Length: 409
Image (cartoon, rainbow, N blue to C red; front, side, top):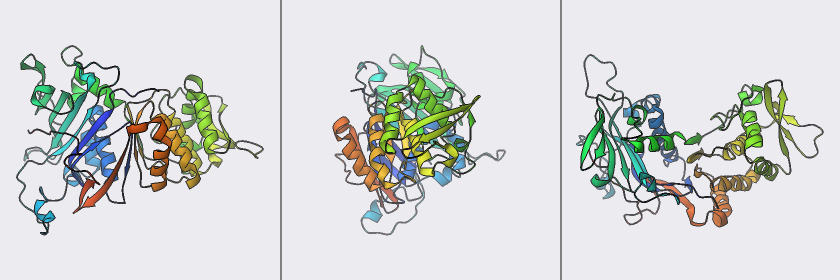
């Protein structure tokens, strides 16, 4: 059975929306569930923000959320008094404004213990600038600190690369050697440091994060690109909006596992077959269904059918990422499709680490059933609950919380 190298074993978030302090263990397949408003979307967005660091988009992404002040934990720094039965009261902030994101990995079966690939971590600390009268951007978030380390936690002796302010340094024997000085506070070291000899760890972490894929909905309205013929080029990775679905399916048929793709279509739609229709350089998706005299073209398919075909194309990608995150993949699907969807996801999890965020109890149950044999103990179920406005992991205590250390600025 294929194994996923260097699975993310721990995700940590502090100070982001309702995630005042969350440290969660992940498996090859992790199912995040909970009632509306419990923090599922915040956990999903925190992963996207980590991905944006490697793409150089994290400041812009936070700006689109209303700025750092809007994205920060809105409650008090401590809830200890409230949990003893007192009212929640605001106090003067003692620590700096800080939004912290990080993850660590476990080793893949091919890794060696002396190599960072045997297990490494990354942490980013975002804060506000020192106000300047001459600037109109005093509310823009800044990257205050970044760390890359070997092993499960950021112990001082395990840190390989560190960024404080505008200086990025790499470990050099028992000391440190500067890689970059004067780094912009709006930029992550991931986009500015590229030294394969002095800091190969940066390239390794950056390439890993840049491979992450997020799917949180596909356009299916009457004007959606997927409903119209599109120029087709080889497409290893389905776009986030699903607009290049036909080209992605054609690519899987040519260089991927086309038989498995067709099996997934038949499993979901009672023996139906998917086809790609070409007219010159334009292509579109069509579905051959039992009892129909002609295939239904993409403009005739239901929203749910198009979304499901897009999920099939995303999960059968010929270039699997290190992490794929699906946000409410059951949206607009008929309940009868849920078991097939679970089989589709668990099959993909054999080659790709998958995180599914859902509030569908039937999908949670179906994923557990489908993955019980193929994934065994690599399935994690994470149930979120709200406590005094704070997202917490149901049933998690001191002994079951993964080890994590944020350090300080």
